[in-house]
Length: 85
Image 1 (cartoon, rainbow, N blue to C red):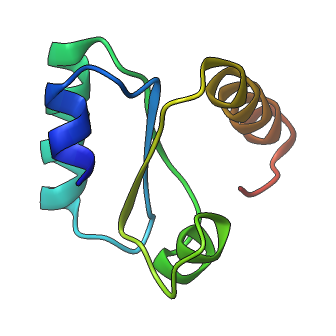
Image 2 (image 1 turned 180 degrees about the horizontal axis):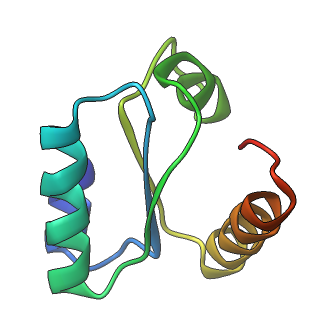
């Protein structure tokens, strides 16, 4: 589903769970760079799933620009202060 939306160029942000494989992260990171979409690696599959209303999610895409901007800012602030997203 996320890849489909990436191809449609409707996503403003992609988040990949930290407990996914490096191969999966590399795939999405590369694809996001090609499409000009920010990509973050944060939270666990369980935590990411809860955030999007599922039991677990390895990858989540966000379409809303404001929500995406806020998540990126939060992520960057937490990285600077040693917090976790």
